[in-house]
Length: 221
Length: 221
DNA sequence: ACTTCATTCAAGCACTTACTTGAATGTAAC
DNA sequence: GTTACATTCAAGTAAGTGCTTGAATGAAGT
Picture 1 (cartoon, each protein chain N blue to C red):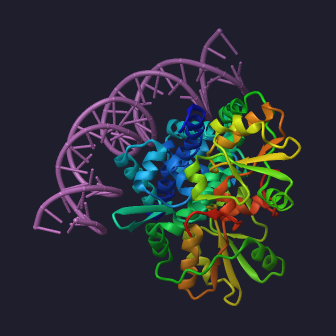
Picture 2: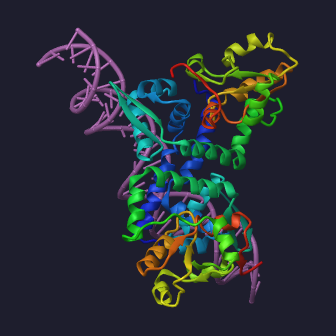
Picture 3: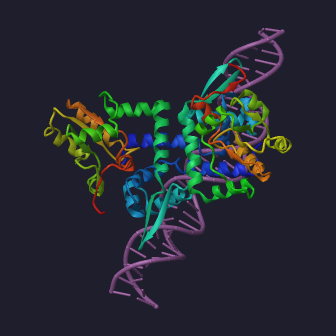
């Protein structure tokens, strides 16, 4: 029934899935989804040792999900293409739809607040154009500096409490963060709603926004 | 940086990917993509022992990719939703795009023949309506009997050589099979082209055709 | 209740994977 | 060339995975 070439193909497909089957590698992919990175920055952001991070990166490269390129002493990794991003997102979608545990965790993140539907990127773009929305970028300042959506205001979760008082309570707040696997926006929305503000998440994150060719402010180039 | 709920979410996403990271489970999913099945038929089709197959199925169920349901003494498994199908297909797309090994295997399947672009399901549907195409279903007879595209003629690879002589050489032949991971159609197209016929594969397989709501002839219901 | 049958569970084995540590590679600057 | 630095390699250990075997569950029919 299954001759050799079929088995060989399945091995390759399974290899791709296997590359996605480690939480550490998903963390790395989340970082790479935001932009290309060297090994050391990736290791620092993900909390892995450098050697371990390098091994994971090679695993991802073997699976075709990332590519690497030397730049002087450093090796720069990046996602191979947008399909990698889609694969990451689809994993999340399947898990959110079908796994009760995920639903439970997301409810916990909302901290008792209701969990409104996210705002589509299309809708957000329209409302940004007409100025009828406050956009918050809930990521570390260095990532905000590297790239963010024009018009967004940067705030970490820690800073959020301080700036809430200064926000216009009449306009809706939309929060976004790294993307597929980032929970900052979830937590920010919960905090904002706890203070009575009308807050929602943007659907997806910065990588998806950029992938669609929408405007992004970048630090270099 | 990564607090506990985030790690818990990543564990769940990784669990989904892990479920897809075994060739045996991909084989099972390929079967389930065609329709719901009990454990024993799945074990037989995939060449796994029943106990082993059952374990794989439970792995897939924990990942939310399949659901089960008792029917008398038997337990019927099926794909949870169309997202599972998309995930399977995206795995294949990434592998075909980025892994040289996959390209190599597919060239080998073509047996030296050129490898034409597949026919889109839309185009095939139109040409079926106007009768300008010969449609071949390259699957085992039992699977053909269970469900197939109206107007298709069933032929296994073994039978193909015999029927080639009887085919109208003026009309293009389109072959399809199980879907994402099935190579029967690839091999059939190579054999047909070797005999000088104008043959191409249908894009995807029966599961994708059915998923789009196109007509399917089924044995029961 | 007993038997039959499909499926699942549990234990054991060979094999693989993730992470750590320390050495090796390769590039750039002096 | 020597030194410094980023990354990769290699070896070792603990934990996990896939498959097999044989027993256990649970539903149907007698």
